[in-house]
Amino acid sequence: MSAITTRQLKRAFGDNLAVDGIDLDVDHGEIYGFLGPNGAGKSTMVKMLCTLLVPTSGSARVAGFDVADAAGEIRLRIGVALQDSSIDGRQTGREMLELQAALYGLSAKHTAQRMDDVIGLVDIGTAIDDRVGSYSGGMKRRLDLAMSLIHKPQILFLDEPTTGLDPASRQAVWDEVRSLNREGMTIFLTTQYLEEADELADRVGIIARGKLEAEGTPTDLKRSIGNDLIIVEVDGDDAATTAAADVVRAIDGIESVDTHGNELLAAAASGASSIAAVAVALNAKEIAVRGLTLRTPTLDDVFLDVTGAKLSAGTPSTDGEEAS
Image (cartoon, rainbow, N blue to C red; front, side, top):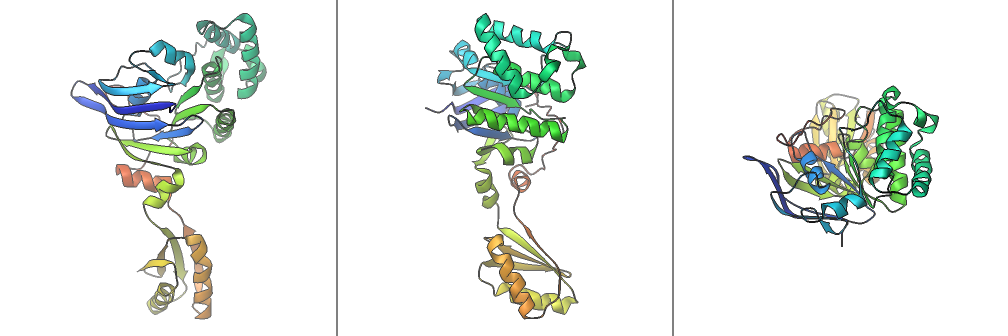
């Protein structure tokens, strides 16, 4: 049985179908990246999986339990760090963790043990006894993560965990996510950063207009939209560029060649294997080259292909319930 399973899952707000018939399977121990533009339905999907919203129709099971019939069982087994944190700035970090442990019914002994574990994991240090109102944005994010982990959940939901963080803090969160996953935790990650999904996710799903439009490993998704591109900047006139194009077209593994001014664009199934052959062939014909670069498809290219828009990395999601 998968850690998370949905079948024809839907959620409507009036006439707006925010989530429109999604089938999803997330394996145990997997990091699943969930991407989509603002208003695509990401937050609505996460809230249903976390039992904060009831589906309009379809079904969803999390940790083996149905979200509509066994919300209490699911909540005992998941950790949730949503974008909108509920941290009280007047309390200390330790007080917030103790409160969270009490809400999950942890004993005093178990609470003390888990406090040591999560404080060390998220690297809060001595600031744990400072008031949360004095924390930086990165510290608040790490405390929120610690609170979601205090009961050692089977599945962790992270809703844009690094939005607004500086690069060092973002890297620290990435390291923590990897560490948790190595211990066997399943992680469902929504993010506005494509490089974050590329770095962390075993598989990625892209939602647009409430539907799951693409799914696969980052590598497979990037391969699905096209070949690698070898870009040759020819040192010479149009005749030199034409001659270079003829040479490159004859190379095994080159799928197509286009020219734009003195620039030549060669599509290849494996750019890494073909780029050396391109350089050798052009040199053999004494064609002068100013630049030779390899461009492989990115998740940004995939996202643009699937949704028709670039993801606004760094812009907080605004897909509330009605807008999702």
